[in-house]
Image: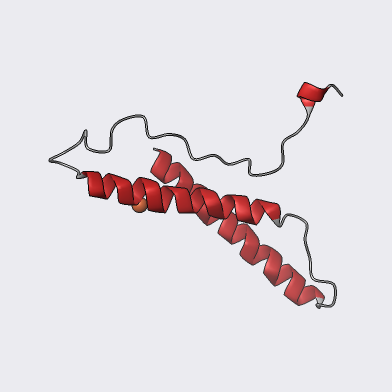
Length: 91
Ligand SMILES: [Fe+2]
């Protein structure tokens, strides 16, 4: 494996730059609305995905199998929801 073949695992989800000024859609959509959905919602979903990804494979040592399964399902649901909202806000 070469150095440039290295797999990056830390924070793989990146908030892309907004490809237009936040006031370009005024008066239909305000800069405040764009800023809210981009700077707060979109950024939040990307940050959540990175947090969920950083806990990949982590499990608590003294919990029962049912708790472990429920925890895994909750995490998968959280990943799905945050990925879906990231896609939605990217679109
Ligand atoms: Fe939003």
